[in-house]
Length: 111
Image (tube, rainbow, N blue to C red; front, side, top):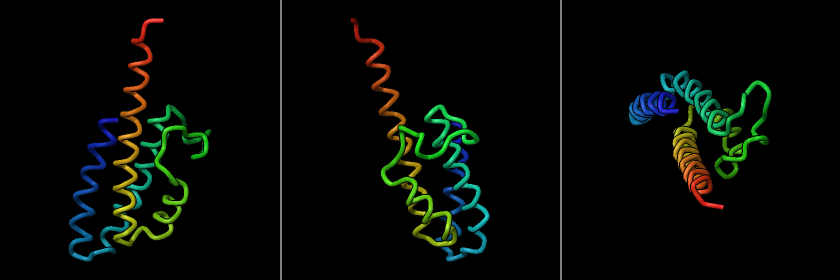
């Protein structure tokens, strides 16, 4: 997971540079990689395999993730798509941390 987040941070800074310079053409291939990376992140944090499962199978996910991903995937060259993708990464990271903390607390509780 740390590898994915560090890769996202690299893409994020690259995309921020492209979009601040209004260079959506250069941002497009990086956005496509970042979208695929988010999908990997989503399935990994849910302990699922993307080949055999769908977004609906994920229990830990941001609100309206399917609709938001559809928007981002259909318009990857837009600044708004980049901002939505950044929000999805942040929300998924928080959801995963929350779930991990809950599971840890649940396992430490005496019965």
